Length: 319
Image (cartoon, rainbow, N blue to C red; front, side):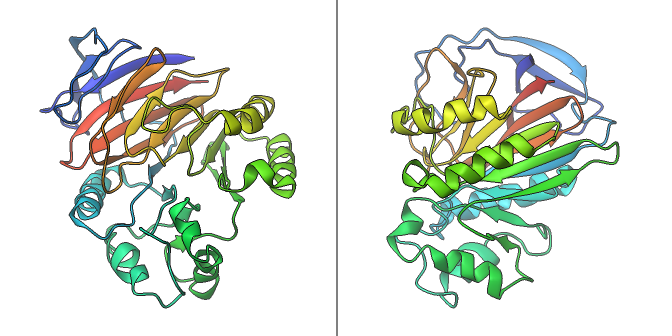
């Protein structure tokens, strides 16, 4: 069940005792840049309590399409550092296209330092980055990114395989399971599909979150991926997946749930494209930024954070 969708005003304080929020209807386009929109937002100012819960929570960040080593990536990385001073995320989901334009050559490639290790403040973002492969990562040997994780266990970079899972458990016993998949190969990869079916079916987690590079549903440049929808949607429904978060579209996007699965895109980690919206849009912005998540036993909150440090939108799902 969706509790409410809200957009934070530019002057809001994220962790204040109260924040001024703007409620936006389900067919809304929240501008992160000065793009025109075909949507008609319905908004009115309201005052609510601080969005930060007193319950045990897991906080994490998600972004993709990062690896350019340019000012765009630097701006988003700086915004992550500033945001996380108070947010205190425990991990990051890195959603592919980690190294433009053609992946990395070797575990000693200088891009590891310039586009990852030094790019994300090693002192203030000293948390694991769980990574998956994007289509640009496949333009060189994608196995290098897995091998880097194995050769450098002290690194924040975590990629134990092309697909894998991991879990977190809150102090009240709530379990959150994460499933990283390789959407470059999954449609013709029976072993990966079998693994995903088994992993989802055997999970007893309160929240199940799948992350990957390619979108299933999108109003962006690429649109809906019919092949992935045919391959994965029924599996997500059978496996009680709550959230699928991906990159590939260079924008920030939240859609209304489809068959009880929420689809979100965070592909604006360096160079965004124009964002579009449609009948299922909750939020879309063609602006650099990332998504922050806060998960408790019965709530999953999403925060859209732009590269200027502004929390532009907040969205809540309830179990």
